[in-house]
Image 1 (cartoon, rainbow, N blue to C red):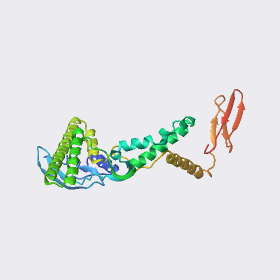
Image 2 (image 1 turned 90 degrees about the vertical axis):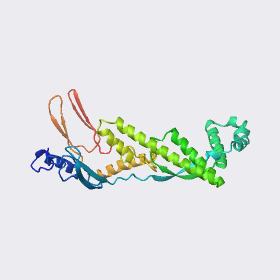
Image 3 (image 1 turned 180 degrees about the horizontal axis):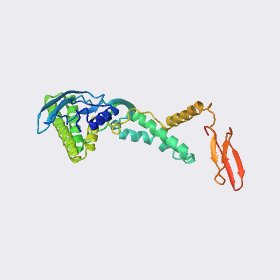
Image 4 (image 1 turned 180 degrees about the vertical axis):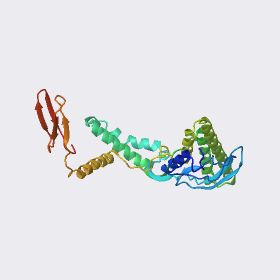
Length: 299
């Protein structure tokens, strides 16, 4: 197949295939010593491919360089409700729990039902948590965690935050210098972990043409399977109401539609019966045979 030959039947079929999938081939000059275009750069029509250059010969093929505008999608921030459990004072919580109804009403609790006991427990514990550890709203970035982030990275980040808090508390130059050095060490560790993870993953996928592309999609987060649903409020009740609304819309759209004519064939004698019954039940009795037909739109 010679791509740049208009008379080549296979080349025409290839160009039609690209057009059917809305793809573009960007190389327009010869890339082989024989004077034909053998090396291609193909991309979807919406992708930004620029500066396609056919360079010098590497062997019998020329080196092709180009620029691809690749942008990772920005992480979406969402507001979540949570409690600051680290600020919970266990001694004060235990003191209030001892004077609550859960402890002082031991006699009265025997006369309550299981549902009443559950409601009492939930209300008392919720009131105690609201007092000692109230609910706050916090902004959170919703996205996938980096797969290379392991225990070493977590420990380095924890130490960096500890040194940052110490510097903000003391405002000492020595603490500031220790914090800056630790941040540099943490970033170098992140870089090493990231490069090592992706290089090993690409090496493991060597020999399979599809796996490197899936790896590339996971890096850029362009695959639908790697995207995380952000800020979704879908519940079972909303899904049920949506499904019920769809059924009602279909019934309303087909309410004025005429019932179709059903053609039945007798298995015993081969006779055909035409049925046009706007009801529910049509019974036709013959020897050793009973025809039951039920048809109603929306049922």
